[in-house]
Length: 148
Image (cartoon, rainbow, N blue to C red; front, side, top):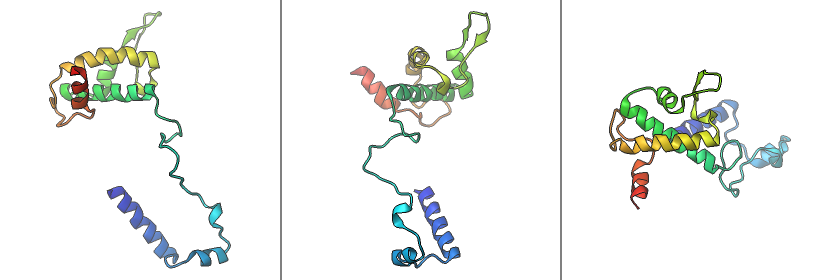
């Protein structure tokens, strides 16, 4: 809500500075600006992600994994990246140790495997434990679903 108010105030300030505050569409049309040539927003389409794609199951799994890792990092009071490394680290065929730098870079299969391991540990953490006052993820809902 605050962001909307700031944007509104900025818009009004720009209009006042430019002297455009009291113009009607007729005056704007007479100046040569066509209303149909302006950018517009159509709210009849279903909501989608900023890139124009619908949120997929894979994206929701990544979000869920990120939230669980964030909860664990908060509980253990360690950086998020360290927890990501702990759960994604593996030794490649060449003997080099590798890990995901972020959840976004992980493949669908990698997310699914990691989610199983993280969820096991995540469920063992007490609700609202650690340095975070409330976990980011909807733990209470997920814990309730698990008991069904």
